[in-house]
Length: 386
Image 1 (cartoon, helix red, strand yellow):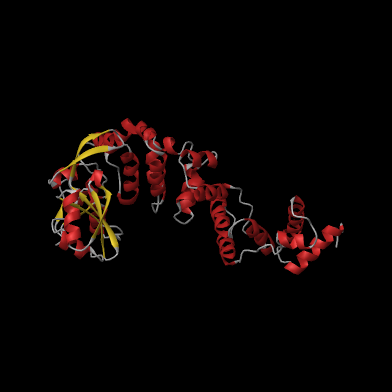
Image 2 (image 1 turned 135 degrees about the vertical axis):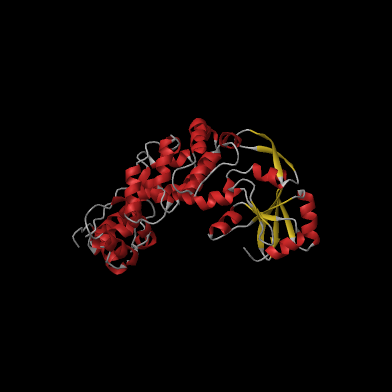
C-alpha cells in the first residue's frame, strides 16, 4: 500500500476518501507512484471544512469541478468530490456532485484508470480494470465512442496509455471509435495536444504505438509526413528516451512550423531547431574539430545530432563520450577588451571580434586571451599575418 508523508493525516480528516486513478493503477502494476489523488463522497465545501478543522490547509484549486488541494506534511494532495457529467462538448464538461462511487468511476476514460482504493488497501474495480491491467489491455470505460465524444483528447490519451501499459493487439472497439472520431483532435488546444504527444514519445519504445497512430490516421493530424523509419532506427540504436529528439527524427518538414502549430515553449523551439540542424561531426573527428563545434553548439545538442545522424561507420559511441568529457571552449576576448584597445563602441567592435574569433576557431580554440589580444592589435594595425 502507498504510504507517502501526509497521507495518514489526510485520511484522518477524510476517512471516506479513496485513492483514485493513476496511483491505484501504478500501485497494482508495481510501478513507482509519484502523485496520489483522492476522491470523496462529500461536497468541496464539506471537504474544506473538515480538512481545516483537522488543522490542515485546504486550497480551493478547482471548486467548479470539485477539486480541493489538501496540504499535509508539506505535500499537496488533490481531493475531488464524486461527480457525474451533466453535459459535455468534446472538450469541457458540466458536472454535478454525487455520493455514488460507480457513477464517478463511469465517467473516467479507461478501465485501468477507474479503480479506487481505501485506506486499508481494499480496491474497488467496477469495470474490470485490474484484469485489463494484468492482460495489457487499454479499454475505454463503457462505449468507446461515447467516452471519446466527451473529450477528444482521450484519443491521444489512448495512445499514451497503450504505449505504457498495452501489450499485443489493441482493443478493437477503441481503434474503431478512434478512426471514426479522429477529426475531433483538430478542435483541441495546441497545448493539450503537444502535452500528450510528448508523453507518447516518452514511452520506452514508442515504435508500435506510432505505427498504430499512422494506421488510424491520427499521426497525420499531429505529425504530418512523419518519418517512422528514422524513429525506428533511432530507438534501435539505443538513443536516450527524449521526446524532442524523437520529434526531430520524425519531422520531415519545418521545425519552426511544427513548433508554432503546437505552441512549444521557447526553450523547446530552440532545442528542436538546434537538433534538426545538420550534423557536421564524423565519428573520427579530431579534438580541434570537436572544440570548434563545441564553441558554437552545446555538447548536449551535438550528442543529439550524432544520434540522429549516426550511420554504419564505427566510433559513434566514442565520439559521444569525447563530447561529453570535453569542456566547452569559451572565446576569451570581450567587446570591452576591444574598446580598451581604442575601437569606438559600435559595429566596428563586433567586426573585430568576429575576425579574431574565426582565427581562434581555425586554430582549434586553444589560443589564450593574451594571444587573442595580440591578434586584435594586429588586426587593428592592418597586419593580418601577425
